[in-house]
Image (tube, rainbow, N blue to C red; front, side, top):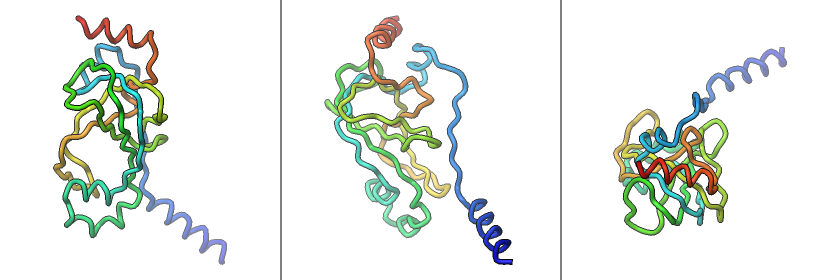
Length: 166
């Protein structure tokens, strides 16, 4: 009887867990990647602090929503600080930008390494989704593994420069 009870408790716990998954279909051309991105640049990752729902909501000045944060304890992202060396698309207002992405794995996040140089294809976002609520926030850049974001290499950069000059 105890085994059945433990099995049922496990089953209930597993079915109530929030699932996230990442799925990308096909590959993207350089021209397609440029077209679908708001910001494309080459830069070196300088820092990667972990951002929680509480931090994101405070930064967006949504203090009223903070009482639901206990249900958002699973929400985490990295906020990478990237020093930009070359811009292919978008505007650069300062030498560094912040790029948000998931932790990697099932949430589609890109796993950047501090000190490495990357070619980053990013989208500009103006909302964040918390518990199904779309909250307006200051614009921020985000990327994922479904973009052409990759560790920088001369072959890919040459291809990007060529496509961008058309």
